[in-house]
Image (cartoon, rainbow, N blue to C red; front, side, top):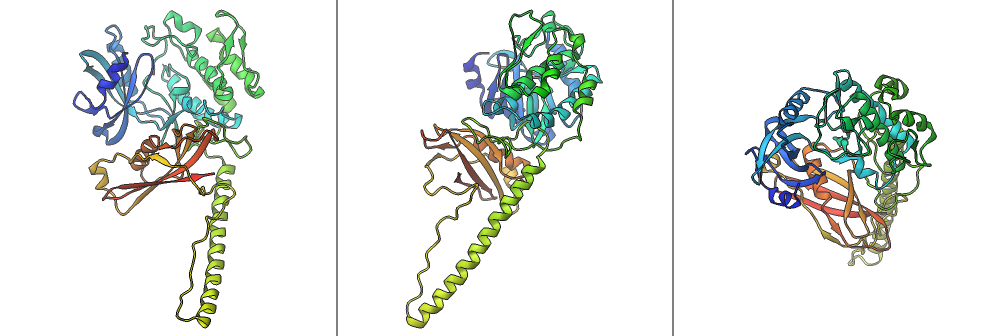
Length: 446
């Protein structure tokens, strides 16, 4: 797909229904834009546009129509699909929920820990079992298709199709495609292959390799956690019949169904953050109890320290006022503001770098009319040496999903001054939404 097409398409409206608000990304056969789906009351959705292959169009639209009827907590909702024309060319489009992050954005910063992968697997396997039970395959298991929506793990749904279907694919072959895919067939065993490749990448940031294309023995990275080696080797067996069935993997990794996702920052026992480490929700499935306890303890400690300091300061100030009044009643005491209170884990920097650009969230007038009082959203971002935001996450659970997404989208566009001495910096961005407008300010965290 030509690069200049995407630039021309932004701000156009697909079929008079879906405005292409902002370019989100592309693959070798498709582009994705931010849009809205008013028919289903979804203010922020994603629309994927791909060339219409005359031989595949009817089959693809039929698949999407069926997928739209599926319902599983760990599958992306498919909201709509159809044909369209852009720039005089015929295309297909599919509309889904908008994902805040995906696994491919997390892995450049750090690998997942074995515990995080064990948290990821139950939801993944449960979604695959749901599909395989209906003779369907996910058909595209790879890091970009492990998505985060409202703090929940979701597998992409636009790649779902019937198992056993023999059809050409407009996408170029990749490492995530099983060996049998070159013959045009898809199977549930193909999902197991894609899962195996993704697990290696998630745990090591490096894909597996084979000495030769037809080699039976896979070469796994040396830093792969030993507990996963046997399972991954079986998932990457070139003979699809020898790969483990989804029921076997479920029995091995099944846990209580998770509901939320932990922070993508390393667990407390892990190494400190490194350059390009995303502060997003990892594609796991539940906030670890230890992390929640640690955050609660820190918060209580900060509040206690501030309370003690305030009490001491008020007593000290009151004493000074009385002493000064007894000596020079005409002169009120001079009260100076204290220096910033240091916090052992996070504090406002004494001399924060300049914020070069503040992006204010784009909020529709209809959404703003629903505000009662003030909606406050805090977004934690990681900034690289150049001052660009490369990862963002909500600092706490927001009361409004719509305004939280608007704040996240805006936060990623902030620009900060360069700092060659630090590989990454963490900032906390505060957004306040009212009927009158939106304000924002930033605080640097150490």
